Length: 466
Image (tube, rainbow, N blue to C red; front, side, top):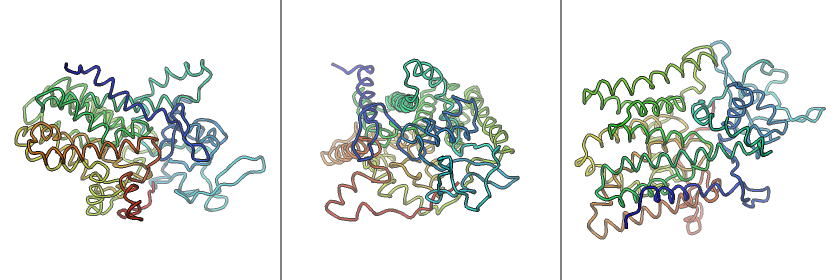
């Protein structure tokens, strides 16, 4: 009896949703069950942007920051009343500035208690502070928030009626889970082009979404779950020659979420030119162009110039970035996703069988990978695993379909399944609970029991700045 697709995705979706049963850690380190809550990293800053749009209809987050500091849930329940530095930016003339320029960033901000018992940041230079009317615009693009905002608008009055408005952050996290599940569906549709049996498509899909950090980030409020969906939606639809306007919409949402995502559109546009599919080229280009114009308009609105961006580009060492993104113990592809070694080895054979598709898919992975090697913060800041590369990791792993169906020798099958299971174990451990392995790799945590200190190995990186 063959497994029907609806049952497979019911099972896979249930497993992908499982990390949501852990809510948070209490102050003693005990894991608490319940509605999922935000953990750290960039999550509270995305939540502040959500709160600002839901409550004030504004991209200016100053009021939300103030209310969160006063004990509100605007940054999530775990951050209510806690001092957190602002991830905000503005321009003073042509000079980039922001909250960090007045109070410091990272571990630098200092906080004090006023006479009326309010927590307030202490300026780096006494008496020098931003003007009270200065807007706090996020350094994080708003695409991932805007994409789920309609769902949150519907959920808000329902939660208010239930007297649980604090659960809006849980709904936002569940949206991330839904994005990962939807992305797995698009991946499955794409992978069916390269396999002979439905079972092979199911197996590869399960490995790719349980054996990578996609499982972990489905429990998060980062932008990566939406970016994975946008990549898989666009590439799956274009390579299957279906609904190119929808594919363009996915690309457009990706650009609003992270403007460098535009690079991922280039192989798909080039494919339309190669095949002289000019109607398809137009269908892809219209949403992409609209998103690019929207990004420029938002820059003008928030920062006073179309080319004033929320984050400045800071180049790093390409050689260090290249090696680190492949081999970093905590953030590299191979240590976090060992089965990727099989995929890399299988690309030549996959290309011989599917030249056009493999050229498009590998080009998409390569241009994004190379861009991230150039970025000084290649590790993605405080996070788990291959965060910055996560949107294109499923593209890298597409050749696993070829390996699964064409491995005949016992040693080939042994290597494939050993690395596949190891990948699932690594990322499964990191997902339960979701916050347990940030800036750590479960594999190296285990190895440190035998080789003390091995879990402290890491490539050099620069401190994150805005």
